[in-house]
Image 1 (tube, rainbow, N blue to C red):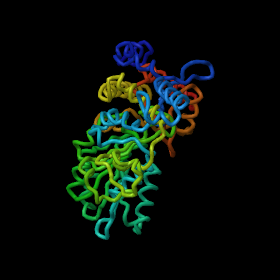
Image 2 (image 1 turned 45 degrees about the vertical axis):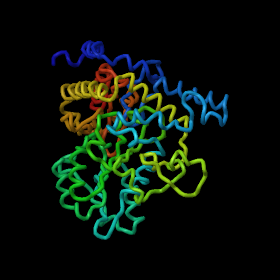
Image 3 (image 1 turned 30 degrees about the vertical axis):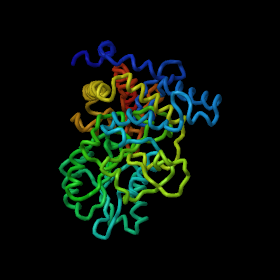
Image 4 (image 1 turned 45 degrees about the horizontal axis):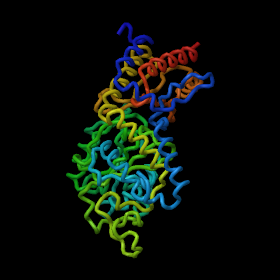
Length: 429
């Protein structure tokens, strides 16, 4: 531990990193002085892979040269372009290829999934969600309940940490499912909680929910590209995720969706339909009789934006270059553990880490609060940002720091803690 907090030690760890070359696949933002930023914000917006621009430019060229014929020509014709992402998505979330699809954006996908999987009755009308859910999820759930004529005060079950604690206990989640199970239509929770960085036990939650007759879905915004998952084997009914955080696909990029194969052949399952969900063989017969595909593609509405899909393909191919999600997770565990050790060694009295230490309950993100009389988290956040660190702040008092294994280094972690120490010392003096 004596040499843990040193530039030399961090650089030695980087020299031993088998994935260090993947950083070169990304554009790292620069500070005003020309130095690279210490970019620890992959949990909010991932950096641009070099392949993303290359692949987008390829499609711009196709459009320029071919016009409408680009739908059917070239190595990556636009008509089936979303299919070129399916294998990569399936590997990331532990699904069969036919269970995943790229479409829409995250909250839109959650709404479309609730059309199918939130079917409230007077006996079963509740949705279980965490109390401090990402606001868009809360709004979506609340509006769905209202849309069906129920009262959110009666139909939303909000899971809260125990008094004095920051994260949810597995036992408390399962106890709430058992308590409310007979009146619950849907459980919709995050794979990774956005505020605390806590990884929830999706397998146990799914099993408990199904035992009570509930449908179970997950928002994987902070999980996709961060942690390995096995959605198919766990029996999850549906999931949705964005692609601009750990999947590095650009601001507002097209999202992903998972629907378990057991639902694919259920023609009676309600859904909002569009022609891109119609059977491929007869889609262009232009007949007004909807025949859904027997795959997650059946939930598509419109042909997707190709330029965004091209950026996602670039990201997925970059992940493939790194050896896939399991190799990235292996590095992520080392990176985040190193960052946690530095914080606990150098700032034990002034920094509190909300994110669980158990690696089964944590991903790349560490959520930090500042315990410092006369200074708050926002003041410290502003100081470290001015010094060249990019992370993010969430009210009321959390600094979220996420060393992404694709492009962050151990030296990034060392330099961040060094700047954080100086910023705290400056606030005290």
